[in-house]
Length: 186
Image 1: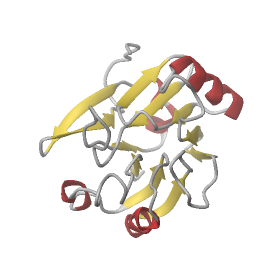
Image 2 (image 1 turned 135 degrees about the vertical axis):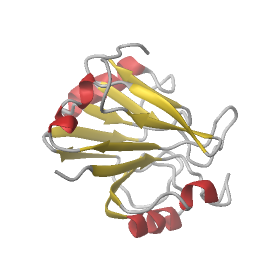
Image 3 (image 1 turned 30 degrees about the horizontal axis):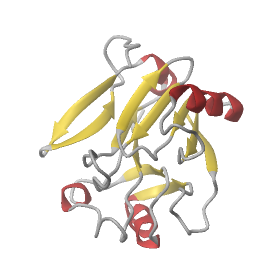
Image 4 (image 1 turned 60 degrees about the vertical axis):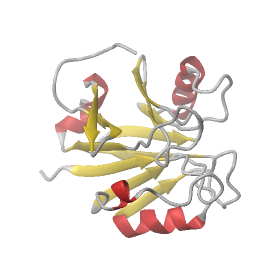
């Protein structure tokens, strides 16, 4: 079975805080099956970029967006359910207990969110995935996105897999490992 390639990013804040998606990413980002955007695009051109590189684009509205986007979205990949929210629905930012509660309310296995601008993966009762900011905006943020690879039964075992940080061209990106040992650390 052919592996599905999913790109997850958000918090680009174009053009208010960043001019564009960095070339380090645009040169690398091609031929995705799905692009998931966690909100705060703030520009329709980010949506157009996503549509050029993927068959399917799933985007939600962030607290800074004026685009006509839903507040949340759900999708399934190989029997694994995903929910997407921006993350401004919880306070303090990135509160894992509240995000996990949203995952339960949405009835999903994995909740993808943004808003903190910092990458994070957590496995509790649900998997929480935050890709960080693709443009590196906001104090303390680094350029970041997440790429999920997998096929067939690998996707169904996603919750049991660990996060690995991989350096690519001097930028940190989160890659959800579909191999290796179970890692329940935060």
